[in-house]
Length: 124
Image (tube, rainbow, N blue to C red):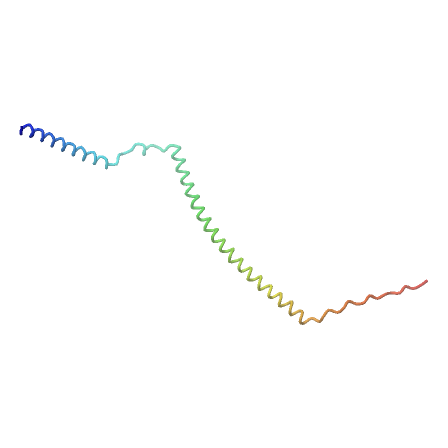
């Protein structure tokens, strides 16, 4: 019985070692990048169109970002200019009121309008 179990044990060891060796070979082969012939082939029209669309999309995104920055900057300028116009308007109104009050103080009261004169017609 020892010779039979001895043969069975060595068969099992050989099978286990073979399985380990095959697993190791498969693992090594899986890590090696495979050369694909499709990469070397000329791209078809669909992939070219997709690439063009992606490039166009990226350009649109960049243009939108630039436009948003410009709009933000313009809004800040408009707000600043609006505040300056309001300040200048208030100053102008104050100056106009100052001139109006100065004119009232220096000018004499208006003279009454002249009385209408009646002309007599000569009788014939």
